[in-house]
Amino acid sequence: MSATQAKGAAAEEAAAQYLAARGLRVVERNFRIRGGEIDLICRDGATVVFVEVRLRRRADYGGAAASITAAKQAKIVMAARHWLVRHGQYNDSPCRFDCVLTDGGHIEWLRDAFAAD
Image 1 (cartoon, one colour):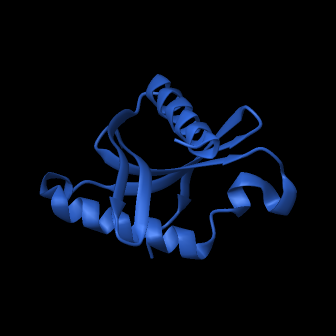
Image 2: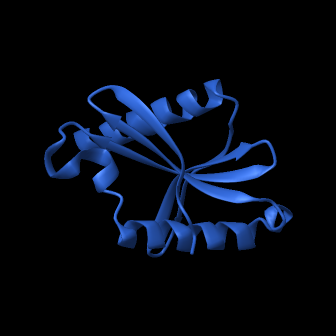
């Protein structure tokens, strides 16, 4: 694992712990399909939460939030649809897309950061 990958994995672990401490339950990590990935899939009560974790050491170019472009959002939504098809028991569950942003050690949780439509 490269240093960059190790930092990313550490950020995802910190995000998972942060969300768990706030009542979410991590169901799956690093769900991948061709063309998309979801860092964390959680349950918040009955709601399925698809979480994008972004680590940025500097705020250049808008920081972590700005790096979640419309194209990135579309890939996450596509991966979420595939996950829901594979896990049919969640078909009737409400869903949302959250982001956990880390910039130099500070964690920010954006609930309902973007929509699927």
